[in-house]
Length: 151
Image (cartoon, rainbow, N blue to C red):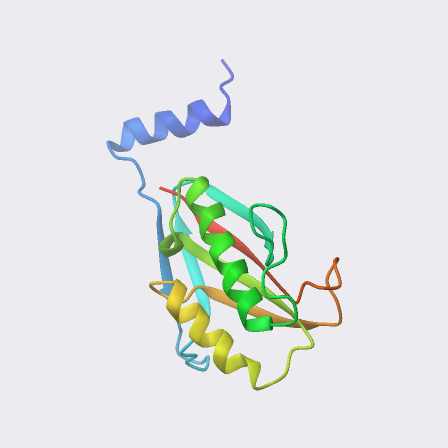
């Protein structure tokens, strides 16, 4: 008899007597520099995963918030990311990885971006920060995508 992978997983859970709880473990291993604004590694076990498209400074009406102001746009993008993660059934605590794209990124931008990440995440997720020349719409200056682990 052949069974599908979902049945096999369910049987494995029944045999073991427990279900693996979803969790994100954030690590900064020895041998890597200790960043204060992001984690070097995020390890997950169990749970469902949500892949969140890049969020920008568009509000629910598709209006661009903070035209010309990269910090206001970053805050709107982060607010939109929270809406997306929560709509998927997760929380910002379950975000394991973000990638932030910033038009015209300057080295000094790392400080305010790091503070923004600390403000929105209980533990800073793994984070890649990328400077780019443009986004799909010229008025947009920031885009943030994420991978979140759901309960």
